[in-house]
Length: 231
Image (tube, rainbow, N blue to C red; front, side, top):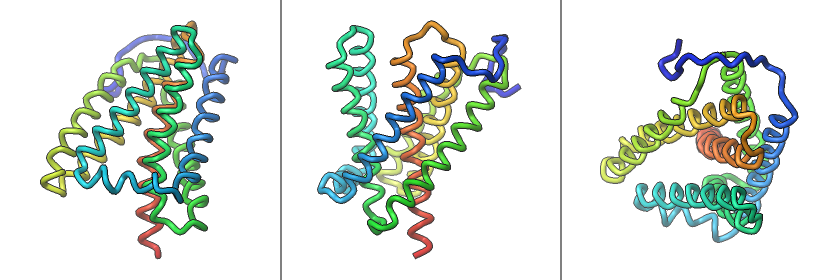
């Protein structure tokens, strides 16, 4: 048994309910919109925001982290309160946070290569999501602890980025920890979809979308590095 798991029988198989399909479909649509935002913003002045924020890496990490947390909080509060206007504002914040960051990464690639890079990233993320989902659904365990471990990874990542702001080699550890945090968060959110059958479809959709988007922007950085190394 993985140290990230604790026993909890669920009796679930691989069949997806209509609610689960709605969550997956909704998160996929939100992610598709986000990819379109990245591509559209990549040729605008907003794509240069990363250059200024990450002049001191910890500043960029804190600003984007705060924007994502704020966007998710506002979106969820709007859904819970039945105020779709507030929920929409939260989703706009999330789309902009991930979209501007992704565009800042993408802008270093030639325009004619950007769609290919986004497509490759999407395929890799889809495969990673499928593997994590398959693992979660195959194991009749609770993955609640993954949410806790994700929090530890995010905190550790921020600490590493703070140190890396002054000792550059440590930045890699920050990247790895934040990436791991989003992967663990994705597994946690998928588990919630699997086991919390009475939970709000909208809330679960937001949770899965945020986790997938976090994974996406990290994979995008890796794909970009590879693409630029081939030039």
